[in-house]
View 1 (cartoon, rainbow, N blue to C red):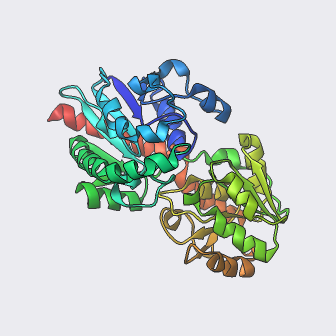
View 2: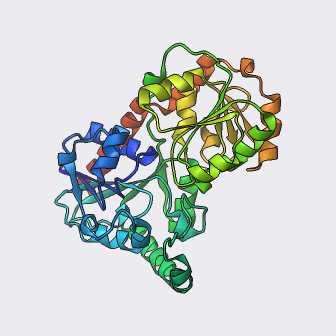
Length: 374
């Protein structure tokens, strides 16, 4: 069995890239194919996969690929179709386009789907459609004219690609539901891996609430800032992103922007916070599980993957609307003494890396046996 792993792109470090690292731990010799790889960026994040395993598409050689990456969005499907992969088992780690990869005759394609492409299927996205700076005024009318037909074409392509996948694995019940809705396909649910063991250790409450997130408008950090401006409680924000400067202008002196952190420092910060605030509607959301693994409760928006990971009243609390007032009412009543670190860690263990490896290996081996027996 010759295995190849395919991943959308390697230019930022998030939940999908953590999954990719674990896929590499399971099949450590398997080559990894991707559209674009930014080694300098990934190296700073502590990305653990050897560069020698990574193979890129023609998009790696496009002019101004870093500055114009969002404008090249329509090329990603074609970049994966251009790859020629000599493997009889392909595992794609996909949020958008790696599912477009061509498989050799007789090969098996298993897609671990982090999300359907939100910008194609009408969901709020990590980034707005396109920021056309510095030619915004000049190009905006052109993009407004061209984007709808381009998206319509890509949506049809996305559906067609989904029909060629042999098996889907969904990272959450929400993703599984969307796979069924948009692709008409069933999916196996296997939650993504969290290295829960590394969060073990002594905990304390140093009186601050915590956000760990990329700073983009989609993440709804601004509603947390608005709430904590009124509450006057200490809030630390870990992470970086395009929305950082705007968010800073909204914040009062009780809110501290820390920026990116080393893994060791982040674990220490999680262990010392009062609670994690998670205002985002995510397909899964690894950060709440990491907080619980550190023995800390989570105050989360009542939607998406958080509903599958956080247990109301035992490992955290939910607020009903993505508004500052809804969050504010929950934080006002929140008492960290109502939550037990052992209960939080027990809940987090259900999403451990070991559990992910066990379930994924079993699924892949069973699918392969069935293919060979057919």
